[in-house]
Length: 75
Image (cartoon, rainbow, N blue to C red; front, side, top):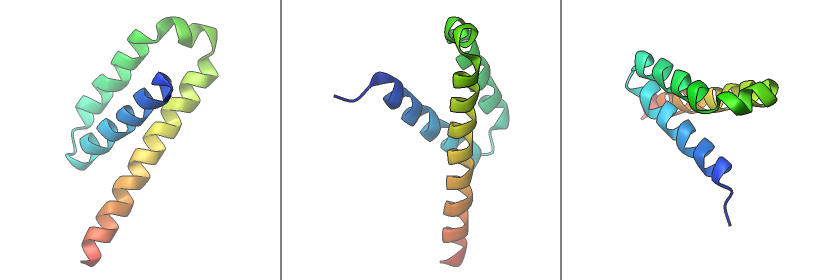
């Protein structure tokens, strides 16, 4: 069975991907702020896990957008 945290991370990455493609950076800031509000207790317990997870999700989404735009530019 798929872990819910992994599934939530996947959907977060996909949402960030779509927001970056649409250049909705203010919505991206709202998403990150909402994540901080919802995960407040977990962040207090282990802040490095939260920061690393957010960094990885954002990095994967941004690199995916750059790769997709580069592929589409060659077509």
